[in-house]
Amino acid sequence: WSYRVDGPKPEMLARVGAQVAGGFMWWWVLWHLFHEYEHITGEFDYPDPSSWTNAELGIPADDV
Image (cartoon, one colour):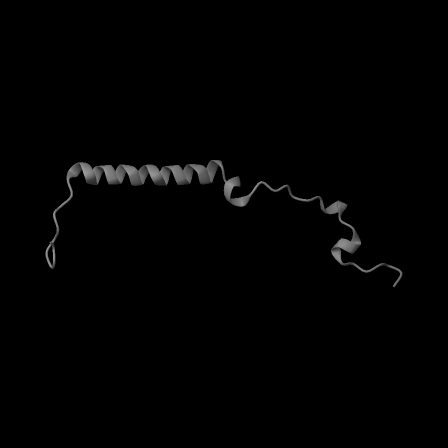
C-alpha cells in the first residue's frame, strides 16, 4: 500500500533491465525504419507518365 508515500523502489536489476529493453526496442524500430522503410511506404513502382493517355488525364480532344 503506497497512498501518499513512495512505493518500494525497484531493484537495480529491474531498472537496468528496463533501460536496456527500451534501448533495444528503439534501436530495433529506428534500424528498420532506416533500412526497411518499404514496410511503411510500400513497394510501389512509380508509373511512367509518358504512357498515360489524354483520356486518362481528363484532357479533351484537340478537335473540339
